[in-house]
Structure formats: C-alpha cells, structure tokens
Length: 229
Image 1 (cartoon, rainbow, N blue to C red):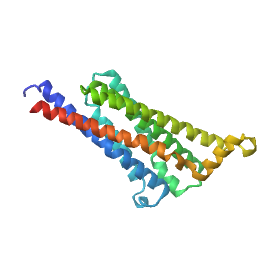
Image 2 (spheres, helix red, strand yellow; image 1 turned 30 degrees about the vertical axis):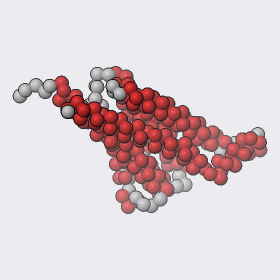
Image 3 (cartoon, rainbow, N blue to C red; image 1 turned 180 degrees about the vertical axis):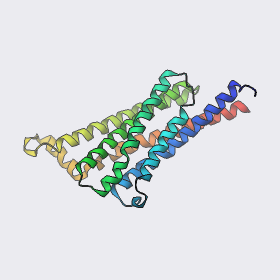
C-alpha cells in the first residue's frame, strides 16, 4: 500500500476542519434554541432528554473534527482541549434542562441549569479562543485581523454578561433596605426584566462568532480550490 503524501494528509485534515467549523456554525444556534425550549416550553417534551444531549454532542463532534488539523501545535491543541472540556460539562448538565422543566420548583435543578448557563458562556468564550489560534495559523492576514478584533469584542461582551449575571444573583439575595438608591434602581430593572436583559449581550457575540466560523470556513475552502487550480 503506497504511503499517503503530505498534501493528501493536509487536505484530509482541512476537510475535517471545515466539517468541524460547519458543525459549530449550525450547532451553536440550534443548541441555544433547543436548550431554551427544553427548559421553558413543551415543544420537545415528548423527546425527553434527547434534544439537548444531541445538540451539545453535536458541538463536541465539531471540535473533535477540528482536532485533526495541526495536531503538533500545542497552543492550538490546548485551546481545543479547553473548549472540549466545557463542551463535556455542558453535555453532563444538559439533562437538567428537561428535569427543571418537569420540576421547576426544585432548587437543585435550578442550580444545575444556572451552572449550565455559566458553562455555556465559558464554552462560547473558548470557541472564540479556538478561532484566534486557528486564525494565527492561516495565511490570510485580513482574516487574522478580523478574527482578532471581533473575538476580543466577543470576549468582553461575554465577560460583561457573566458579571451582570453574578450581580443579579447577589442583589436578589440582599434585602432592598440595605441597598443604596442606585442599586435599588438596578434591582428593580432586574426584577422587571429578569435575565432577559442579558439576551442582547449574549446574542451579539453568538452572531459574531457564527459569522467568524462561516468566514473562516469559506477562506479555507477558497484556499483549497485555488491551490488545486
């Protein structure tokens, strides 16, 4: 059996990289939609635990596919491993969405869902770091700069969302009489809107991450076809 040439090995790893980027592109919004519907509505109730498990596993599959590219790069591998770790945490916590829907009064299930939300923020942050490492290895300078700028913005927005979520949790435990007027007004806003006030801060980095995933995939495909022509 003849040895596989380096070029064919590279093409094979690039094909898996493209599949992984596509899986993340479609899996991120699907996972968010399915998780919210599983926790808050009855749209997927007849499917039990399966929908959130499938969507979360889909994201892990995408990262696993991307792992075939540049296996020798330790920084790249470290970023992928970190994202996969948060993906596995999400996978383990995703059944609690269904159980919380069944028993919404359970403090234990609510805590697990909140942990899943925090882990989801870290997962999305890790995906942005993966994109940074990937952009540094690709020869397209314009793409590299775009990834660097938008991932930095995404990380700041996700950090802000996390801090506001923690602030919301802390303020909800403090009696209103002990709070200064400025924080009382903030507490009133949180009480009226709940965590839905954080939705714009979450959807914007999600949308920009999806755009970067798609553009990176297109740049890789264009480079492969240009090289073949």
